[in-house]
Image 1 (tube, chains in turn orange, green):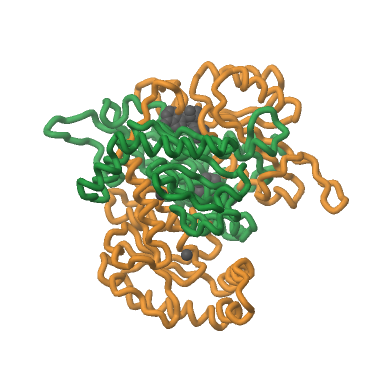
Image 2 (cartoon, chains in turn yellow, orange):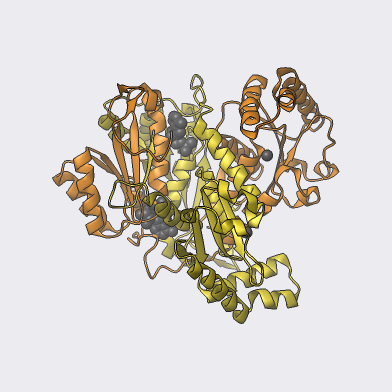
Length: 311
Length: 311
Ligand SMILES: Nc1ncnc2c1ncn2[C@@H]1O[C@H](COP(=O)(O)O)[C@@H](O)[C@H]1O
Ligand SMILES: Nc1ncnc2c1ncn2[C@@H]1O[C@H](COP(=O)(O)O)[C@@H](O)[C@H]1O
Ligand SMILES: [Mg+2]
Ligand SMILES: [Mg+2]
């Protein structure tokens, strides 16, 4: 995934014309984030040939498409551009309409949620409402869950980077690790899912807050990473921050990186209950999945770890 | 969506037995977030009957399921529990296996991404890799995009609640509005999508930072909300924060709320380029969709606003 502003579908790179990008249109009567999430995951299956390897793709997300007129305009445009159409439309007449128009104008298309909604309907033996999320008449639930998430985000921001160690007891999850192991983005990712997260940096020569060793050990997670990868991440980071060359050398030099990871390793060894997660080569959401699997594992009736919710 | 820890499928509420919850199992060889996102959106279609209205649902998310043995165990359990199985499995042999096992044990099931991946494959005229995201051999791209997102999150945290007004020029998006219009969670949501966001509170009697009026007007968004709804949100908030009754009355009393929203309205009127978005009844991700639609609108070749990316 590169720049999100370039919508030209036919690029010239350094004078050489590359293959024309194929388009994927995503259409939703809501936000479009579901379609985007699915297309993004699906495109993971084509990583090996995207952008620089011969099959570039441009995606175009159309949200809030709640009437047939707008829908037709988009499908016509898709036909002109030879685009694939991926849609989520709650109103069954809109979904049928999309399908028919695509057939008429020979646009390849796929309904993301239709099949799941159908299965759930049969499973629950009730019918879907057919109402898009923004439909008037739907009254927005200012639910406990909603407030809980917002509170989690606000808590987590305040606890970033070791701030307010006196609040560690209030956190659901505490992350600890050396600089650039991804504590901050990971904390925020988990907060969005409703967990109050605090992160505590491990810095050589700096004492860890005492409160960290007084809280429930089961909620503390250590992060570690391959030293060579960390060195490279820090080099990039130091460039961004514009560190002077001296500070940089200390921060991102191999010897220092190794020593710091060893220092962290000793702290982890002294706290054997903390799971230690190697984040090397993991996206933020992958590490989040590992942590939440472990976090929920204690409360399970399943033999396999699972995250359970009630709707 | 209520508590995420209760996995009992048969509840007794105040002595009265309610209908047994139906289960949905979500299985992924990756994080499971795609399946979860889709099930969550799909369940929006059944809002009217979930938890308190007679068709409660329990979801169980199994992530990192990358071998047939684990898969079989889960499907057997699903059969026992009469659960619906929703899966995303990149390895085609695993996907086929899931389908066959579900047929054998009469488990209702649906493949979330299979159909999209197939359509994309035909569209691009290349084959999917069939490799799950965590597969060994896949080398993790520490891409520019990846670092850009992390930087956006870190920037956004630092700019929360009017902090560091000297940095407003560096933000991609600036949100402004009175307390409890959702500036913080919205900022974080947008940051996760790669935008550097700053939020500036509007407080009656407090001067706005001068820099706000010097930056590119096109990146500033005002948030407003229905006064009655805001009053209720603030009441809930004051309770959470444990404000004394005096501070609370000022913060959440109807008169004060109205005056403050009018004060904000005057600032918005003086800055007519700023779009003003009414967040009443909108989830964070819905407001985010509106803002990004406006944000990207300027750079479009489409008649319909779209968010475009290149993969
Ligand atoms: N809470 C909800 N209630 C009803 N429909 C929803 C809800 N959330 C998402 N949807 C529908 O699910 C599809 C995907 O939503 P979105 O991710 O906002 O594009 C759209 O058709 C929405 O209308
Ligand atoms: N970057 C990626 N590369 C390959 N496959 C992916 C990628 N991201 C997601 N997937 C696949 O898409 C499905 C959904 O992923 P997840 O949301 O992690 O459960 C799984 O089958 C993953 O293996
Ligand atoms: Mg940090
Ligand atoms: Mg705030």
